Amino acid sequence: MARYHIETYGCTSNRGETQQIEQALREGGHHPADGPESADVAILNTCTVLEKTERNMLARARELDDETPADLVVTGCMALAQGEQFRDADVDAEVLHWDDVPQHVLNGECPTVTPDTETVLNGVVGILPVARGCMSDCSYCITKQATGRIESPPVSENVEKARALVHAGAKEIRITGQDTGVYGWDRNRGTSLLPELLERICTEIDGEFRVRVGMANPKGLHGVREELAQVFAEHDELYNFIHAPVQSGSDDVLADMRRQHAVDEYLEVVEAFDDALDYWTLSTDFIVGFPTEDPEDHERSMALLRETRPEKINVTRFSKRPGTDAADMKGLGGQTKKDRSKAMTELKMDVTGDAYEDMVGCESEVLLVEDGTDESLVGYDEAYRQVVVADAEERGLETGDFVDVEITSHNTVYAFGVPVERAQLAD
Image 1 (cartoon, rainbow, N blue to C red):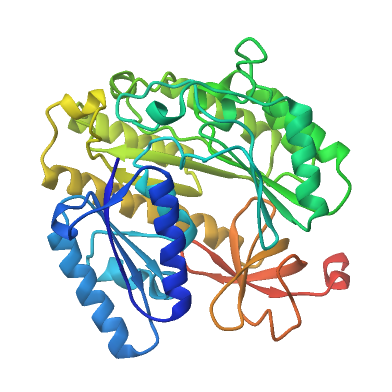
Image 2 (image 1 turned 60 degrees about the vertical axis):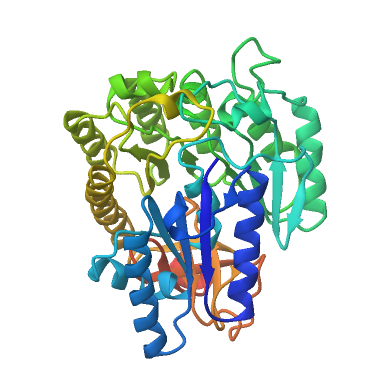
């Protein structure tokens, strides 16, 4: 598991975010390092209250970039409000929202291990773990050693858990698991029950809510891709969003990773959703610098990113996990991994920025689910693209509200929206 180093600056709220990040990392089996020089990942939780503070944050980010042999993640207020400054300062870092940090640190492994399969209600967001375990055997992942093979409760049981969350006040249900795409493989002879689960949640539960489906490997999605895409097309309750980590654009590297899918299968999943949905978000992950990745393999990954243009992309430099097969492979040099990570991250920012630029001037319905900075609230549109409403609290808006907004601008990885009246949308 990863060794992490985390530094926090600013207010009590920032420190609370750090506590949540650390809790998620520890539940996933990760542990703190003695310092940035011995860490697999360094996390800088930033403040931006004063211009002097901004300069200090940039200086500390540069220092950590030099001190940390692997990944640097920048999060917090400056990352969200002025993330481009780190890129302009040539800091080799992933700029992420607080909520996205634990997933990034997993380095392509299964999501954070769930201690059980009980639901959690956090504000207006309900967390619904639909199963434990996975069916993969990735050569770099140690999570399966803790979780084992997939164990799926019946569909009806998960529907009842979702119903209880909605009745308790959840407006957004986040379906989670080590691999949601293989939910039900143990019950349904190797075919996913995810389409049935989503169909029943949308048709059998009363109330106004949205559902986000968590990480699903391409192999599990591939066998039900057309059926699943049709379920998404038929139900507005579902965010038009899938997270399908491809990890590499090279079939040779995927084989060495033991990822079970080929690039063409990933592309066929994307094609199925493209055919069924006019507006949707593809999220994917890439691991750069896997021990057997040569320059041509890296270029194939870059080409795949350009071809599919996912709107949300996690880029992670490979780091060894003790006890995994990949840990015994002869690794690539740190500078090689940094160079490839930097090239892909720059491409990622261009692709993501283009997607959010296309949103400017459009109107959409947003579900507000999180507190932002100052008077702002953070929400998600129908394709689960993040939208910040700057003066939401001043306008009397609260988390859990559905609000129609016009997208006025963006900050590469999220958009800014201004509420509009419904009557305006009908004109």
